[in-house]
Length: 113
Length: 112
Image 1 (cartoon, helix red, strand yellow):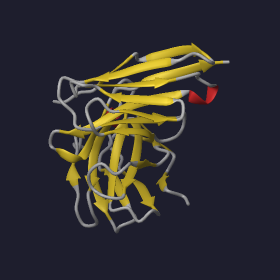
Image 2: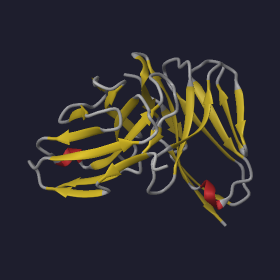
Image 3: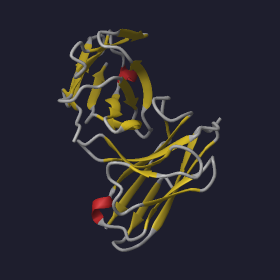
């Protein structure tokens, strides 16, 4: 079982470039999430999708868009990358809304120069 | 907004020592979760606490839900090198259980 798979693992962008981070889960989970992790700040929720066809903003949604393509896939798009978006991005999924355990991917390390 | 503060920020200990860390908030939480993140990986859930005063163990790990509901504690007994990682507390935000707020993390280093 792969669990939660994120691609790419690493990415370097120039300011103003765009890119999409991909996430897929094979656990038939309903809810999916995107977090960013910055030193000394823990993980902060960017967007989440409680079920297929729905998305909602988290704590830090500015500069990002998401698409819940189907039950398996939840992508995160940076339309015009900024240095402040340099971070490690984690996708997660859970069986249901609420407090089902989150299963995390291994992260995408993004550097914006 | 809600914040979860963890202390200490980092710990460097000898193998075999016991470890204590805590997580505090100015807000009340109804659930406390403890996650561990190993280098290069995503966090993994260790323990979930649902009731004030609850004490729950998972092997050498024991976590407690503080009576005031504003704090939680995690203890690791007889540490081993594979305990290395960052430990995060987490809880649902006041806006609903769909969103978890994570603490700032405690980085643990264990020396043989």
